[in-house]
Image (tube, rainbow, N blue to C red):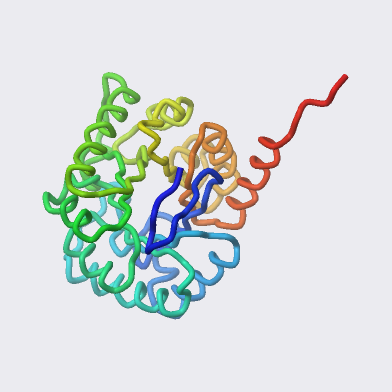
Length: 280
């Protein structure tokens, strides 16, 4: 269970942490906190010191109902940050969070090592072949609809069957496009009700397909704070609980805002898995 990233083999048999770096003014949790170079670099350094293997740089919010920004604006936000991170922290692997192939081309040119696409190529017909030509790992996220429409009463006959079928098709399409390393993300909160999200988490182990790694992004999402009747700012404890369940279901990468807590969760689950029965 590994991927090749920037010429390095990353072993995912021990789960890794992807730190979220939103360089946007309007992301659902940390919008506006890191949308200049100084604060972005400081947050990156903090997440690296806390144990992140990947930093996921996003310049366009994908929260439900958000207005779409231009490609030029997205590039203006992400390219300087990616360039600076790669220069300042050459040991880290940088992901670009985008559904636009033109952003991918320029971001990889600026130093990004992998692509995180919330639409799995559904919003840009050139995405898969672009990633294939660039030879970088690709995170394919399941989403019903678009960020503008995805939470307008999402429906499935069976959400588990739908996501498994979607992933099977995307794995085949990715390989056909020349993508060697694909990572699957069930897309918690992307076109799903609270019930859909918890069904996916409860049966996450059923989404292990053809030995392809699973990434889980539960961090501070509405399935947590709406269930607990609180806000994203108070959803860290809930995030840790659900990340624990995801790890026990075989998640390989946790995408999080709070790296330290996620890293500790991985360490504790590792210790639990390595334990043995006491003879009585």
